[in-house]
Image (cartoon, rainbow, N blue to C red; front, side, top):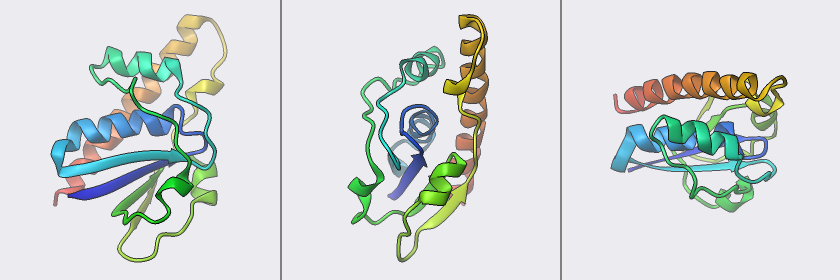
Length: 138
């Protein structure tokens, strides 16, 4: 079983969505973890838009990357530039992938406009995660 760690700045939105989709697509073929270089708590809007797509992340917690410093990690995926710059180095067989996504929590406008931004970024993350799992298996 492969271990995948998704990193973001605060482990509240983008990394949590990626964590949910990676686990959804990989099933029991991977253990998926997520963390931040800081911890900001789980974003309720991320939970909502993921639930709309049938993926429950409401049980996730916001974790700090240091919690996984001594773990063997096969894949580290950074989903924002800040995390990529501040990402610790894992020695050994760890493969790093960087795919930055826009931060939906920075969206402004009416509640509908903000939620549309969350959904758009969620869909981008879903596509990336599905392709990542397919590639990982080959």
